[in-house]
Length: 466
Ligand code: HEM
Image (cartoon, rainbow, N blue to C red; front, side):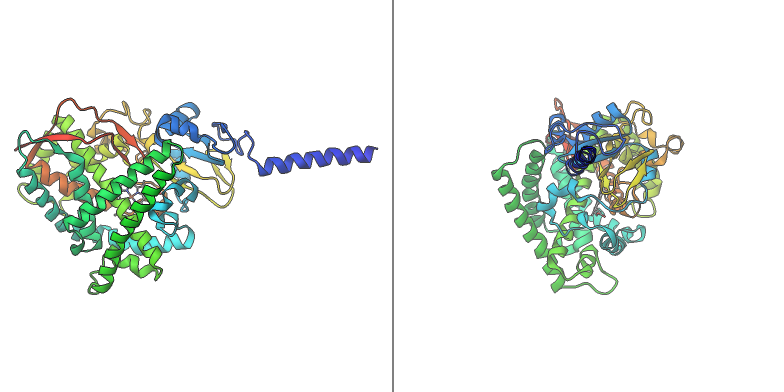
């Protein structure tokens, strides 16, 4: 009888253990404070949808639980970190958890760099990064300048009271600059740029609905059809480059993408991933920068004074960009205030420790870059646009990882960081030295935080000749 009782207790104990192992219980698998899942299948996805975006959800989560907090992405347990000290502890982690970005797979393709981890991911970055180094960026200034001049010429015809659709022009600049500098001069024709943008806009809007609305067949079809069209455009460029390869030493990003593998699906996926990574972010950075300067005329005047003092009538290039300190502060404050890219993420395939907590292996860890950028203990009055936060003396006072708009985790930070500063600087110098930018009155512009933060609606401006 005793033997049976021992057997029964052991069996029940084992059964509970097995069930607890197979099905995540409401008890978190680590000591990180956080939310229990609302349901086993959806976790806290409903909570995320209610707040409107992952970024806003993370702001609330960290407010409630502190700089390290946990929640459930569907059935998946996820940890999020939001301060410089914790960022430092994840400094060398390379691999990105596919689960959190799965939603974008139909657009960029499963083989794209976004999902490439381990040796494969490192090898791609080692190769592709060659065309985005400090040295490589030098030759793009002249291309950026040509496209910015074209834009300024167009704006010359829209002086005074004409209402200008700011984001339209900024996205077009960013896409054209990207194609011309990284895929080849011949790829920047207006027809391709327009075609790509119009398809992309439709798809992106559908993705954003997916974040907060139940799945819909009709929406999925729009995404699938649009993605095929985008892939056709990118494939056309790939073919074009293959048929007309560059001279030795003249290789651009597209050539390096083609060098990595003979797998056409991978080539096209990486080509599309870089276009999307580069164009939407830079287009929004420029739109928000001009929006902030239009709503802060004193800052706009300071930028223009600096341009006159540093450049006179010269164009900005790789040598002079570093002297435009105030403009750099404006760009940084734009990245911070508008939270252009609110998050990154990593995982490790071994158990690890973070902030004194054990993190079970394979747990996705979100780098809440946008939450850290709005931390009022580091950035007082965090929603106020104040470029002077980035003067050397103020920057010295805070831990440097607190501001990490391009990510911070080692070899996998955004490859386009220098490129984005260069492109944005050329466009801003060219436009602001020629035009005084003002908002059309009566607009309420809000931030919409998807994977990239964009304005809730078109930003309308007017310009005056300086
Ligand atoms: C305002 C401009 C930009 C911002 C704020 C931004 C931000 C980011 C962030 C936060 C990440 C994730 C980094 C991480 O996982 O640690 C990222 C990744 C990436 N970005 Fe950017 N980015 C910008 C511009 C660009 C440009 C201009 C390009 C291309 C020329 C680019 C291409 C990419 C790619 C391909 C990845 C994925 C890299 C990988 O998987 O290893 N980005 N970006």
